Amino acid sequence: MNYSELLAPIHRFLHCTTPQAWIDEARKAENLPVLLTDHLVCELKAAQTAIWLIRKYVADKESGDALLAWLKPYENFVHSENYDLQFLAAHKSLSKSVITRGDLPYADELVEKMVLLIKEELHHFYQVLEIMQARHIPYIKITASRYAKGLLREVTTHEPNTLVDKLICGAYIEARSCERFASLAPYLDEELETFYLSLLRSEARHYQDYLALAARISPTDISPRVRKIGETEAKLIQQPDSELRFHSGVPQVTPL
Image (cartoon, rainbow, N blue to C red; front, side):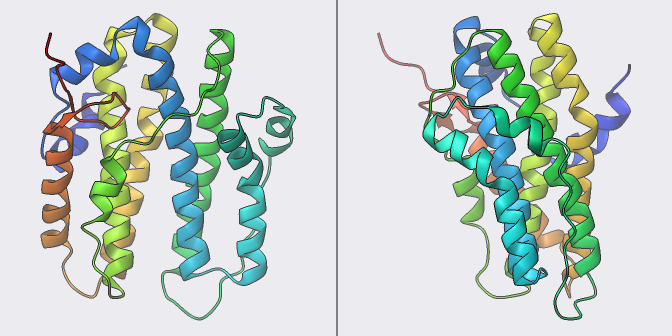
């Protein structure tokens, strides 16, 4: 399958491509455990972000609490290194209806897009964990990269711009994930290449959904904010990083 048409808007949106130095480091067999572990955690973080947006801006308390309960077993696993995975079978088919509060014109759209995103990210979590188990890669907690925090420093502190900026940040995270999956896939074994390429369509749609929501909610043209946050995102990707993570920058060379 030719993915160039799918990736073209992603490449136009991002201000830089993944540096070859990151790909060269990420493709090394000895780095696969940390890469898959970080990928696993990133899927959960994406779901957490979507739930946070629903709870903060549009859901009533009962719906918000139900969404938190939906995520709790995944969080318990990641934070406690708990290997009882029975919760996955129960949670794979879960569905949550969300009751919106107030009369915000974008509430239904935000809920629809974010609930779909949550379901897909948790499914990806399950897929990554299956791959890790099949390869006898234990889940061991690792530190987070500076990427997401660096992006969120750009978020303004007054509404609705706070929400708009967070949605734009979400768009960049999803777009970068899509670009990285595509960049790294050809260097991996056949199973991982197939898996990463299978994620491209959903990641591309997630970026578009975030951006469309930002444009709808903002009272002004979002182009300047998209450009500013995009410039920051590119700097984070191009600057040196001491630890390899899925969204880390250029690997720092340790002096001999």
